[in-house]
Picture 1: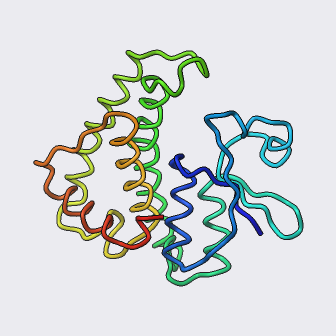
Picture 2: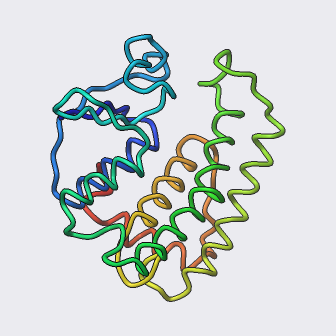
Picture 3: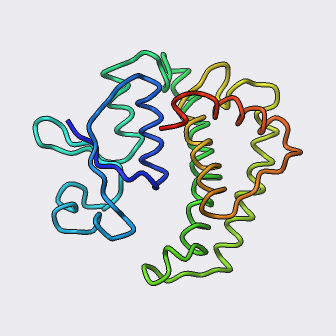
Length: 203
């Protein structure tokens, strides 16, 4: 079993944090997406979509998409549980994870792609669109602050994949897309300080 990874990309980090929370160690191979190594015929044979991470199983087959890979490991190692112990909890966590993915992680990613010099020459950038996506992400932080309220975690009383998606989106946005978290967002900042102090956040 092996994971194709890239240390600077957000989706592989989501998987690394997940595995660290579970105490699972899997060998990895770095695929530099900035150098286009994920677009070679050899890699596209493993994942035709070209994205990371990719899990290579012992039988030589491959599984892509970070949530799908995490679902696989959750099935193999259900504790500590990060995706829901029963149907009601599973759909609650999925709801929050999707909200964060679509409304924060997505805009941050598009702001990065359309404003960061790393993508110059790799795709047609629209800086104005990138700026609007950054504004959308900034607005979403305010909404998330309201939704967190006095809860310890995004999806309720315990740490889940929704928290992983949010911390990766925020920290990637800060590092690569110019996202700024307003200190006035007390709930969000309290939550972030808490989840960032977990050992898995260093993954």
